[in-house]
Image (tube, rainbow, N blue to C red; front, side):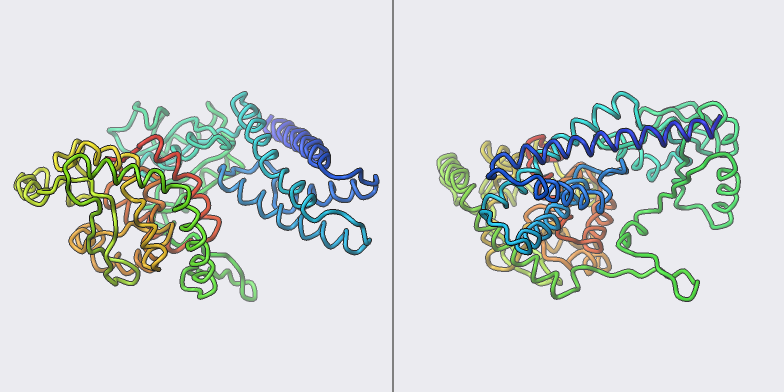
Length: 462
């Protein structure tokens, strides 16, 4: 029965992959409409080049992409296709406007992303190509994995149930999914739910315990995934290789590479100039409203910790009352408020904020003057947030400060697009370390693309 199910699944993946290819071929022909009439052979080659490049980046495999991973792979395929097309047309001495070729090839990117999004969402919502999953471990790691699946429109997995040895979780629900038993009940539960995959999300388990779990699970299910703890996630840039048959894991930190630093700096300067041009009307409006409300200074300048622990003066629009320091002393005299602050939890309905200040903080307009810090080379568009020394000591401590501020502080960052002030200090430390260890241009692009949504939804912003 399992073998028959596997064959049906394989045929389904093949069929829908073929449909996706046909959709992309059709989109290519639409893009060619802006170009002069092409010979049949040229049209076939240009189309084939794009499909081949998309195939090379595994874009027809229906893997568990996130939207941002899918976008980065499509962009990589676009760059490779553009290079191949130019070399081909140059080789056959085919006269064609370089601008028209660039526009035609570039137009394909948003079209295929839109088509892919609609196609995948409809498929997965219909239950097609979806793999059912049992998660072993209903702790933070299991909950995080389930959350990532449920929040991704491209997720090809659906969680059937949890298994956990915690007595208090039996019969309950985690992220809307039931806990159907203990780890020892795996064989019974699997015979009932017939899941396609098992996910082991018990980062605290010893090697001996993991070996025992794997020995049982692998006898009854074809695919097993392991979710490590957050420390292991901070080195997920590691790659596996072998030395004469011996497995070796190598890891590198992208932001220690001078070439990567130079690339990030160039992107920062160009992006900051463009952002200043785009957002200058909002900045002028904010400055006018702040001055009008209480006649106080428009800008708030404060000493913050930056790259490699160096201090610099950061610029923000003032969002608090002029006597905010006095109000702060009164607030922190309350042990509960100060204890929450030490955990990295910001105040909701902060009495120190002005009326316009509450709005510009919620919409992140107060951060826009930091674009000048980016132009001065003190900050980056993307990175960990710059904090005061007292906050750094509370949130990060000496050990994590060195890890986190191995990157320049950013105007936005992975923390902001992951929940901002709704995240506790522990998770903030781990996720910022993850960013530094796994930096890439594509990760920065993904964060910048997610930032507008985080701002619009105001999640964790107060």
